Image 1 (cartoon, one colour):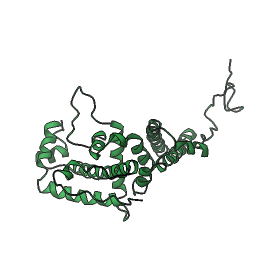
Image 2 (cartoon, one colour; image 1 turned 90 degrees about the horizontal axis):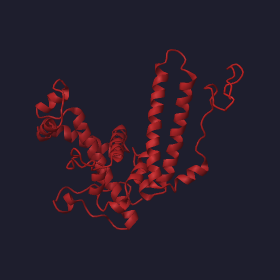
Image 3 (cartoon, rainbow, N blue to C red; image 1 turned 45 degrees about the horizontal axis):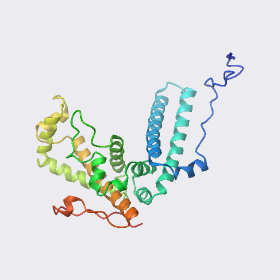
Image 4 (tube, rainbow, N blue to C red; image 1 turned 135 degrees about the vertical axis):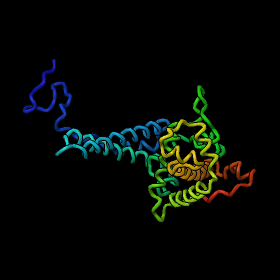
Length: 287
């Protein structure tokens, strides 16, 4: 039977379990493991993307605890923050190796605002052989407003990919002040356009639809905007980020399709048949 020794003598049980004092950093990603990341199956890559964001959330919480600690933070909090950050960095390097092993991953990484985790996540979730048009990608990612998840039916999109695309849009917002941020600049332009349309009352139908389909507290600023036929700032922002994320996905699809099949993909229905505005050229492609 294991006996616990006093903390002044040792820092662990006889059975090898650490007592919480003098903890060592976790093992970092080795060169061999990084190389192995290149050949990961998409299923494993999807899992690691999930793990990355879970670890990131834990690190953010630990950092918050440290900032709010009166006086010197507890050693365990510091250890958690240090090691979760190390795990984040290791997983990011693994995701970069996975992304760089694919043409579409390389292209995505060349765009300002798209890092290794986002690039790897898109490659892991989207199978180009099952997406003959970008519309299939939009549907799968849950950014097609025409597709509604009805009660008691199977979700018509991939929830994790939808979150990833949301993070993608917000990432373009963060880099929108940079001169070399192609998609960040487009986000700014789109938001200005959405604000102008909103102020002109052109989005009143969207405001009415929101009131009809969503239970919004009548004491909120959002309700006050909707009832006047206007979208609140957060809704306008979301429309702009979704638009730029969908544009990026259309470019991602073109790169992935041409890299795999060697020919250009079919044009979206709205462009090929309805005569809508042409798509913007894919930046940095061919590479």
